[in-house]
Length: 311
Image (cartoon, rainbow, N blue to C red; front, side):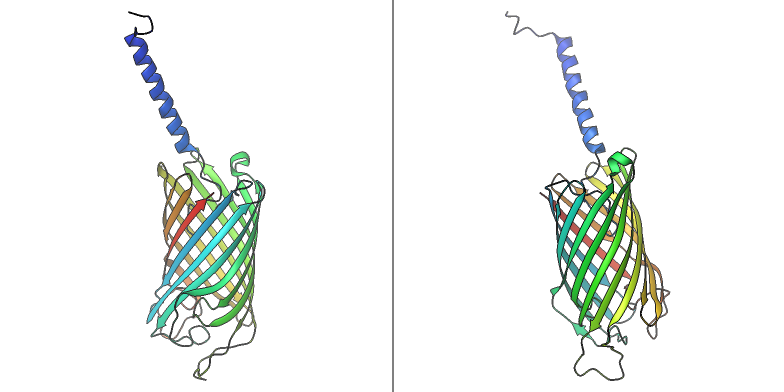
């Protein structure tokens, strides 16, 4: 028998074990790898990792806002964002926005002036610049400064015609724990807006609907954790605090939202599903409201689905 056809059983077993251990190490390394840059592990709070130079990401977001505690209120917001990594630190993005509203059985002067049901239609666009100051992987704590411009021509609460120009300045933070298995993200931001409502023909004169320009200032803070429980799958939770100040009334509203997320990602595609109920809130209330929530501009419930494609 040729020496090439002879096989040592012990050598064969050792080789098989070596291949098995190599495969196990490779799989464990892949499972422990940090998440993809720009991937949204949570529905509302996002991380600080930028897109690599030359990379693109298409991100579609659909949010359902519903239940104001009285009557019927159901709204859908959609955003289609395209982002590009200009460098390993600098990312630019542009998005198109759309929405629909179905409201009945509830009239709120200045906010919901009449019952209205709109079909789904374009409602605005946005642009965003992000610059990464600290790398999560290299520096331990990732930090990205952000600037966004948003223009819309529909009121997101009532579906009425309303021109709004907003500027947002933000900071995103991110850190890895347990070799990347646990991810913390935190966001803070200030948004300034100037808005003008259009007149509504035939509106009952007893219902408030001001067409004077309004200036608003909103502060936002969010934080969340996401944990990889098996390869490609994460579970997480986040909380968001928002408060708004308006020209003539000072602090108009504040609200806390918090809820769970589940996230899946492979090499090219990721998706995140989030439920975000309002936990606490305050400020103005409509006549007959009993809950300690802010239900004039916000709702009791939000559900959000985000889907991203990297290329």
